[in-house]
Image (spheres, rainbow, N blue to C red):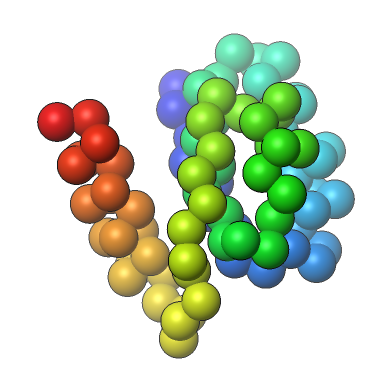
Amino acid sequence: MKILHIAEFAEGVVRYLQMLLPRLEARGMTQFFICSRKYDECIYRKMVNEVKQKDLTQSFSPLRIVKKVLYNVQEQYM
């Protein structure tokens, strides 16, 4: 199973991810993490298969972010 995590703000989400990501990895799940520049990318490289930092600052629209991410992933792997 593959899981895509997307996070814009780093406040309360950091601790949640630090608890969640290792548990999912232990269950053999492939994880990708797309985050804003507010995150320390090096910390998450140890916890997930791939980390990408993007400029996610905008009027928050989850569908717009997912569309942007999928477009970037498609470009990268095609």
